[in-house]
Image (cartoon, rainbow, N blue to C red):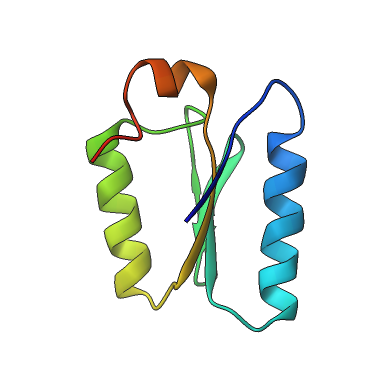
Length: 86
């Protein structure tokens, strides 16, 4: 799990890391502002960082789909709301 936080560049950084994982032939997933995606599937994401329970469901499905590496955008708002706990 790699979480990226900051004011600018979270999406770009997450896409770059996803590309590095792809070049290394690692099964990866991305949870970000635009969407979350893994194993050839893509889902709309209404917020940058989902609530912690939803996040656990997403990551469990990623695991069940063979994902071994996750890149995630972590907004400062989500950190303040403890969305990344658990």
